[in-house]
Image (cartoon, rainbow, N blue to C red; front, top):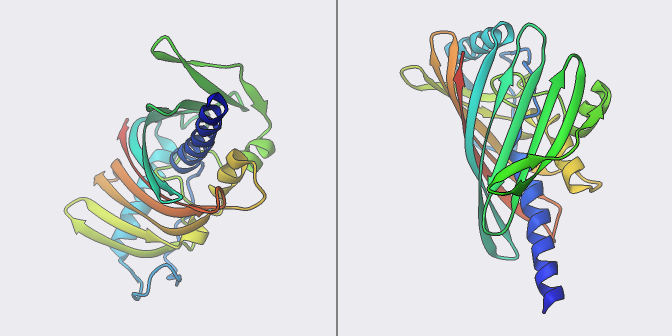
Length: 255
């Protein structure tokens, strides 16, 4: 009986930690925005890229590139393993120093099954990663692991210092205004996650990358400044016979 409980706990811990960290913790950079239209198997509809929506996206990326900011993040990951549904809530945020390029990126998650946290930072040109353990109603972070820039990128992708964690170069399939100051973007899932998939592979400790089915986000702005980004990803990881996941999260900016 004890062995069964230990096996089940390990099973859920591995799954949830992999999904949470891979799906919700940013690993992107401020990309060059191109207005080239692309096609993808993820949608059967003809793509449409609105020039004004792309202009707003480019202005917001340019704004965060030269202005320091902080964010708060709330989200969830839904997964189904062998027909059993599961949802994990995640909370966190970032702080980015535009002048130095330093950043701090943290995500924490608590549930009845698992409590997990990770913190990543760049300080004075050095990269650090640490995991958190839940003790006395709070997360306590373990000793930091120091990485070179190349080592960080190979394991976690590009640092998350832009408005979204995705690569946007040649990746925008659809861009349109949905209401005043609100714009929706649909991305080519393969191009958009070309960097972020590195972290999924590292977290799972596997040989294969996840397969992303759809990636999209909604951007709320105040002039050239981003106010809020809400993203949705659907992907499949090669674990436990194949696991389908849906990640949704919202990040709110302050300058």
